[in-house]
Image (cartoon, rainbow, N blue to C red; front, side):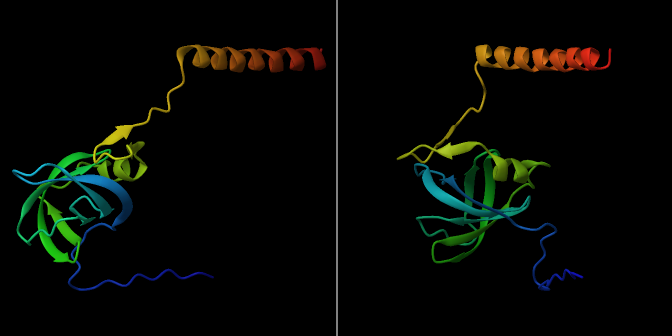
Length: 148
């Protein structure tokens, strides 16, 4: 028999569990060029990032997250290069899942992600559909022949 237990800190006010993301993102500061960061984890209300520049608590930033877009956030704490951020507005429903399941991957040497499309060509899709339909009719024909 398994018993699941959860420990909660009293000062941890998160309404949702953190989702591990560990993906490349983009840090946007007012007058600076975009910087590559790692988005370590994510909730609808905030995230933890690993940024190459130290950001003081209270700093407003833009965090580019693959599958979500750029989100305005306030840096709440910093420990070395790790920063905790609270979003100005909660993410839309499903955004955390989109970030975790995103098919967007970083292009080597670039801070900006590039979408990788899993779509099949029109010809391949048509051939696949024709094959599936033909096999269905073959099964129907075989059943009629066996039970005739």
